[in-house]
Length: 368
Image 1 (tube, rainbow, N blue to C red):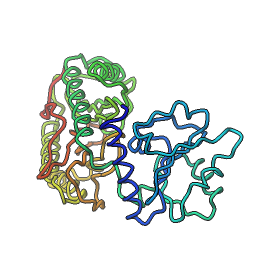
Image 2 (image 1 turned 180 degrees about the vertical axis):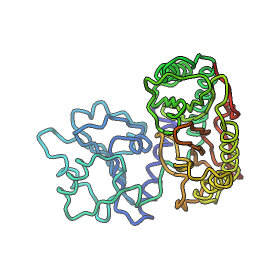
Image 3 (image 1 turned 90 degrees about the vertical axis):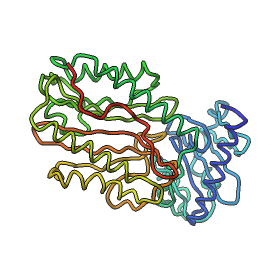
């Protein structure tokens, strides 16, 4: 993407970052390779030991410091808005960077390597460095129309992958085999990268982040599948729970409680509602059904350029939801030694409520 609407989008993001940093009382926002640098500039260099650093300060133009050997490869739609400086291998990049840092607290993006933070602290000992995630509101939490469209496309592709996976054989095959099938279906439906394909059968389904392994799936077992990846830069993430030919004892009741909890959380979403209220809506349903101690994680997480990003749908998070925020709603119940059940959709906050980006079936499905 070069010029035109792309350049305008990144220029607006850089301007907003400077304003937000100023409102937070910061001297500057410092971004290194990762999703924040990509979001602000469209530039996606690999994270390396050589320092790449974007300095966004209130009241002055952004500056991007790059290794001299990488300057010819710089590709940013907003390049004409950014002052680009190169440092040579014979120089100490942190000393060079220190000259670019304004007074006041400096917010470092959360993905910055510790080695870079320590180098900057040593070279600029008179400055204070703080974590951007705590010092200023998240810049990427509210998505624009293009981002919402990209997330909807990724979610739709994940739905299509689920429609394919329920047609394969589960019984008598290893979890790893079904996991590989899931990865193949995601790629077939457009994902450029597959980030995870959780397949937890029977008691393994009680571990929310179970790594699919050698366990052979049997008839009469529940199987939790949580999978996603990147499509055109944005993430998908969906969970559905199926059973192999026949339901295990108590499965129908547990799954129905999870489905009702997920629906209650979805109905709680609207602008101005604290994130923790959405978590509570799901938790109340599960608590009332007597399974509260077996709901062992937060209700959801934000999603965008990263699988997990703000806002987090968890007790204690008073962040008020805004139109354009996107996050998962994924309550679950995990009965030790028996089975787990989880349903996860990505949702987007609208002006008066929310919409689901995933529409794969939520009722219990039998697989063979």
